[in-house]
Length: 551
Image (tube, rainbow, N blue to C red; front, side, top):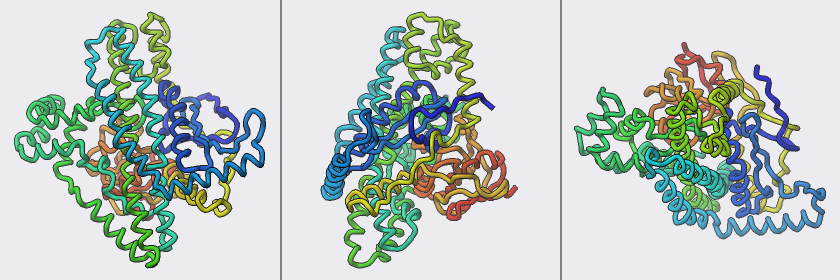
């Protein structure tokens, strides 16, 4: 056991964000992420009148802990007055009512499509086009600082669009469940196919796939036996669209959220496999399933509510793609760019004998980057090596799910004015679906019971994935068993037959991608990665939320 201090980072309850970052993170993430996280959530909540001012984020021993910030939290002068609380509830009620009446998410989507995303892509590309090997040390230092600032801004951008991505979706699900009397979780399948960037054949890869279909010799390179790097280099020369695709996405991290995860360009095997799978994928299957379910739910809706059903479904489908786009086009790119620059710094330090392993620079703090460029002997090579080993050991050990006192129950929404009740219900439902999980393991070593994520049955070998090296062992038809997944995991999901996760709930990334891509998912098992042996034959029942170890 590691001798770690788990003192809460502040008063009140703090919940570990195991659905996104279940492992101990690098110092740069821990230092830069909290400010962007709070800034983004503050902007997201303000547009909808939510009774939270923001979300706090703090890291303890490298693990992220979150805490809601109620609008009436006591300040330096004590709790707010009764008159302030009454007035503020009235103001936020008006904001919430206007948000639904004016469909404020449409302006959010317009801002994303016409301003935020294009501007982010310009910055990503400008940083990606820099030939790091030709920079002087001072030039590399300046580039690293640009990447640091870019990361901080992109994390804020990701969370600024949270409410626009989630509120209309939760609002539709809440209404449809009330009208039909059906359980809400399976209703998420009405969104299958409505997030194009989540598809195996996404808009970025589609031109390359179209060109490959017309070129049998290029297709042969996908199936060849020569080293993947050689085949990919030849393919980029032969098919310009493949080169364009790599220039567009190569700097994005291939999985997870931290600097320890390789960029796509570092993984030629992954790129070839993704192109190969895209050639064989049925692009219409997701929307076909979604339309069938939508018609079924509409028929079960009372006639007087069917027009409203149509409107809420159309609005939620309109913004649904923001769920993945806000991460893929923001922090996933910025983290990858920062990683590549740190690796170049590490390559130089390793060549000069300053450090023993070039990837150890991924565990530097922002201040230490300057210190080393200025000639400081600290952190030494041994100190960095120990720091990396400590982070890995903490990740293996895990962290308490809660620090501080137990969180109080949320106020009952039926006591709120209707507009506030509506927005708090919609966001609360989806956020619980993303961040929630079972309180304790259920079942035994042969029957692992989790949360139903995506319906379906699949039997295949379990592949335990605790880090990126494990992820590269996945073969087609494996059952991916991991702590949690995120948007950047999409690069691998064409290979899996099913997903099982320790953390997350019915609206987690793993559950949604299972529904969208048509494979079963069981999420929130708490310790599935410990109970399921690597390589064991398992049977996944996504509808029941169970995993049986067959052999």
